[in-house]
Image (cartoon, rainbow, N blue to C red):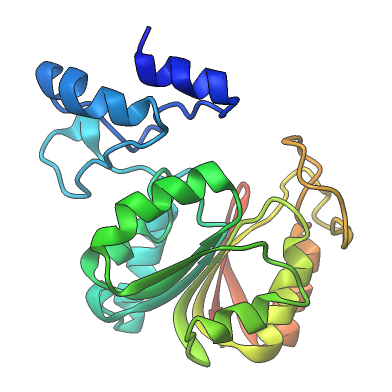
Length: 242
């Protein structure tokens, strides 16, 4: 039982467990260095390029692989790309933008969860081209937030995953910004022929499946703003500017 874990429990701080894209680096390093950090919810991200297949980087539906393919087809080099990630989490675990940030891309990463943002801040301190913010993403405020952080009128990638009223935030973003590639969360449990979205405002996401938007509603919105839906994999939709 580690002293750091006990101190967290006494302060009422939620314990954060190691995500799958983090690893322990040797027995002695783990006990002397990694474990005290882990007790405080800080984990060391694994290398994005590692010869050990057991430590390969992963995303939920292989989104990072699709993003890499689309960028290659569009002639966008990762190190010179730009991205906006809203609902970035800790910035590493199953992150669709982490490999871009690690390659030197210029980006903006936003998350509102205090524990995840603390981990993001620790990891991204070595990424000077990425600006980060702990802030809620709402339809009224998200564009002003990005503009205040120096977002360009057009970026190469938008990754949006807030497990909530994503539709309304996406609509606000597309009214003011352009993106070459969209990586969006949809809800695969909503019937594909039903236009449905979680309303705004609504309570904070409770962790269940009542979140996001249906495929048909996302498809209609993207058509309105000149985007073509090119790939859907369970809960993930990819689109590109026409």
